[in-house]
Length: 374
Image (tube, rainbow, N blue to C red; front, side, top):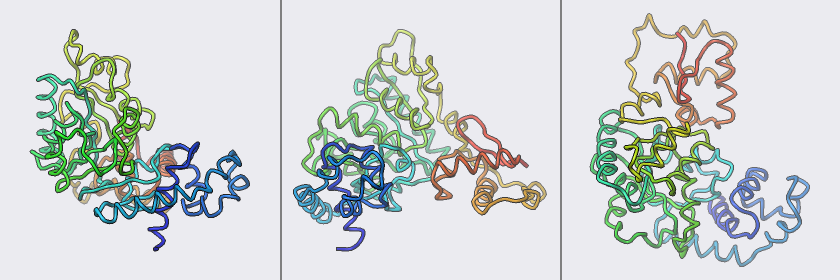
């Protein structure tokens, strides 16, 4: 077994250890450097990671979990499913920075989960004609303005499946985040669309084969929908629903959240209107507004005489120079885009941008967009 397969095996096994949970599993892997070492060096955990109890150490002595992980690893290899651990470059880097990120993901498809621009489009399952048309228009316009954007949603009824289908119709890559294993498609009515997505995007899940689409799993998967994107767009939502949970998670992850408004009396838009009123989402009327607010507009390269005079920026570290170079080449960029392009963790990127701001090299705009001062 290769080193990567060993890490996959133990990452899968870690998800089955009782009492650990999403946050606990990620802290263990981050603290020990690998899932394999979490199991291999479990007796050292209390000394190396404060707060780890003997109960967790004992729970990690889990031959049944490891055997079940072997079965799952054999299944994903047979079905040509990619098993992504936190150590994999292909693991969504935006999601990796969230404290409750899954320690392992399963993916089928061809999408780049670290695309420079990722937007999650969510909404009610009981959509109206207004919601369907708004979703269709938004994605058609988005294709014209930002043809390389990755569209993420949950493959559910209503706005989710409309977002996937409109993305496919406009030749945009689209990824569905599932609340069950990759041995099934739920709802089965969306199987045809799901198959099409394998060639133009893909299907992603944290759940093992045999997992049923239980209610809690949908809530759990919403954190992936929010965490792997730059922004969440709520197209249509009632006062309660999964899309509002996703919007709340986006806020907790410092992701931008947008909502299309509805008429005052429409119950199907009450959730969107409340998000806007409570300043939990920015009002959105078009794809152009999203692209502008996110700093995704294509920039015209400045004339040579207008280029940033790098020699004027004294005492910049290598990482600071890299960020300056990216802003110089691509124009204003959102922080999550910088994180992906520079391959620098978000906590480190925050520190770099703060230093550059203090040195008068960059300034921050709305939506966490950074602009190089000229």
